[in-house]
Length: 190
Image 1: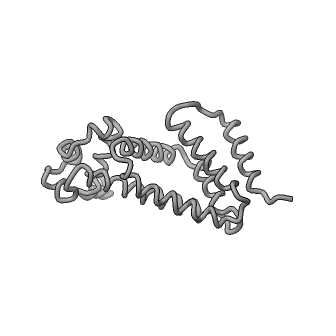
Image 2: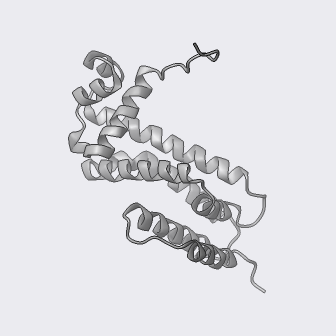
Image 3: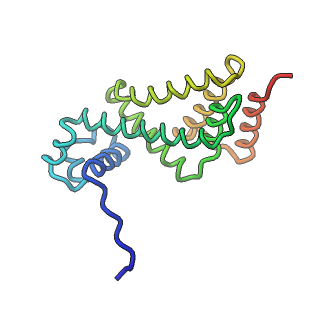
């Protein structure tokens, strides 16, 4: 018998969202049905319907939750950056280059769901677009020359997409060189 208490089970809503995410990652949005999500979550279909009245409501709930995770993860990275010029853009670099493998896997899981949801209904991504829009708005206040912050973000997004789609893998020396080149963009002009 263990001396430590068992961790409480997540609530039904969380289990349903976790199940929906797992189904989408495994079989795509087409494989997501209310019945499958209820079965995977260990709830009745009525229990699922109490939280999500339709497949679209379930997808919207999942994307809203993911948008919240993205925003919270970025907030944490941003707060770790020192105040001053380029803070938001430095956070984007840290977000891209400094995450442990477990965080990268979370981002890739989320991105796979984003892509599947986009294929089903592009409007489902509006909560994520709003988060990215807030990050971009912060970048416009970074005090960097026009285009610098956007170039860094575009490069980081490109690296993320290359990884997500398995287009190419960077060697560690290449990752360091890319980061150094992007950091140079943030240095004040002479």
